[in-house]
Length: 190
Image 1 (cartoon, rainbow, N blue to C red):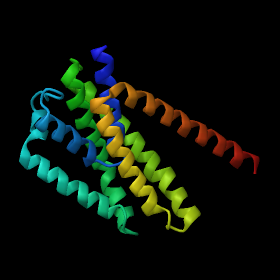
Image 2: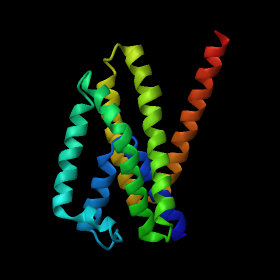
Image 3: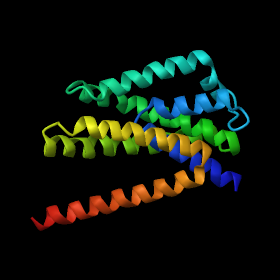
Image 4: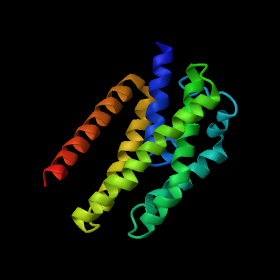
């Protein structure tokens, strides 16, 4: 059961890193720092609980949140985050996977990189362009706020209630796949 919880936690954190790179790292760090019995990070990931790293992550969260809501800058931010979000997902996956399981760090980093990179790609190459095209850019700020809220909730649930986070992740991915298939069928019919 612990293996399953660790895997759900790792996948949830890396998926939320695809939406906002620093939120899951900050959540992991804060929980590990203030509630070490709940989340005890192995070395070198225990650095996430360092107060100076927590301050740095807090500043980075604010910068990313603001940059993602300013027109034109949000596109530059997405370009920069193409590298940062998968890396953050890799760290989040490896940090959380090694808490409960003995997953090889290279495998954990690769899984986190792929999960966060996939979520980021869908966000920046499919969802955001569709929102921009259909709303003339007016929908980007509410969508960005929703992404930040989703990333925060997913991160907290992934650490504290990983089974619920895993189920929600599966449901969300299923809905996204269904939406994508319906969209493709409509575009082929036209």
